[in-house]
Image 1 (spheres, rainbow, N blue to C red):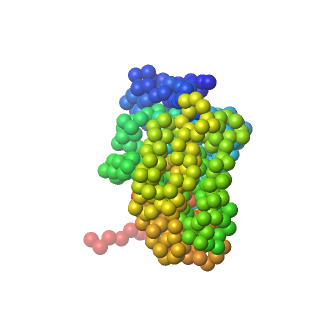
Image 2 (cartoon, rainbow, N blue to C red):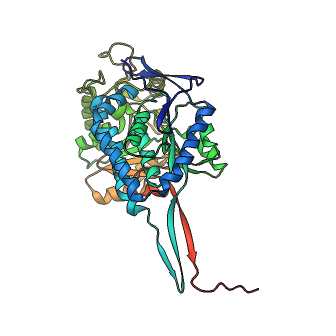
Image 3 (spheres, rainbow, N blue to C red):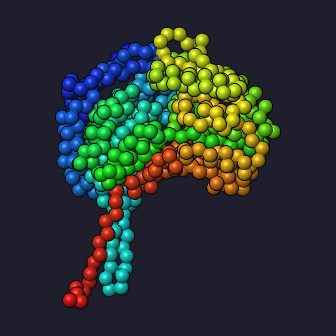
Length: 487
């Protein structure tokens, strides 16, 4: 099983290699097998990528919005035609089951290109401001060269979520995928060239922790968009701020799901499972603190346990498989250490908690895990685990649960399950999060903004709002008469 690309980097419309860079081994999480070897970007590669983007951006920005839109929509069409191929690559890259990647990964990337390609002709319009005899107008202009830094949980989706609005607004982008999942973004770059984008508008370079700072600090970079952890976000935002660069930070979370006693229990369990076990729990917006009203706690836990234990864990390339491995051995060890902390601190292990017996070999599998009787001070209730570990906490009072749900440095997402819509809107208004759901969870269509508050970041991805973060306003005052001066 191999997925070796033509070369490590994609710059100025073609594959480029520099074997002086440190070797990156791409490992298939289901078997532990090395499926590709790539090289991190050397300083020379970084310079080539940014110089290519800087040159191409001028040409791309001169195109009409409709012309740029046609390229993005063509890229979406190609991605949909190759959905199976791209999904299989995403499964190799991440270990996520093909059942999931075929509906959630390249397809959401294609949605992003199609959406921004469709709205760009009108969404970038400015306004006219009458000032008596004189007048003024505004227009949105691109920032220039954008750096995108991706995470390993949704590599193709993130490559598109950052690329589509950046390109729609007239920027060029240099994208660095996670070294854990280096393969998918290269295909996105290929497809954009095939769709008609100028060479250099979308470049991909591989890298590790040493590569990001070189990109962020480069004087020709105008903006940095990061998807990653809070500690990484603080470093990147700080470095960008020191040079007054634009930033978008989509960071981690420890999001709450609040299940009231009048909720449809099966629907709430579905939401909690989607918010904890999808992508083997490796989703930043996951609702890993599930607050369940005491009146329905026992029923909720019993049904949750049965449904969790029925999840089919296995070969990600088998379409019947519902949960694959974690992305890496290191990530599995991290999650297992949190499970040990949960046990040690007195949480009740309802199900899971170890490595499944049903899977053999060297893959990085882990059982979906549920803890009950979790208290707010436990480590598993405070820190982001980024694995399939659900913490169920009790509550009785609305005001109490709102205060407890907000008692965190994170503010990415939140969910509420109730049949009382007055209560639903009242509660979401008080929850401190950027993206919230009522009676569902983790649905992120491109039409709606996505992003967090507090330490979970700032800026928004998706929707027309994203264009504001990849462009800036230019204001022009038009004097209609003679210019006068008092001196």
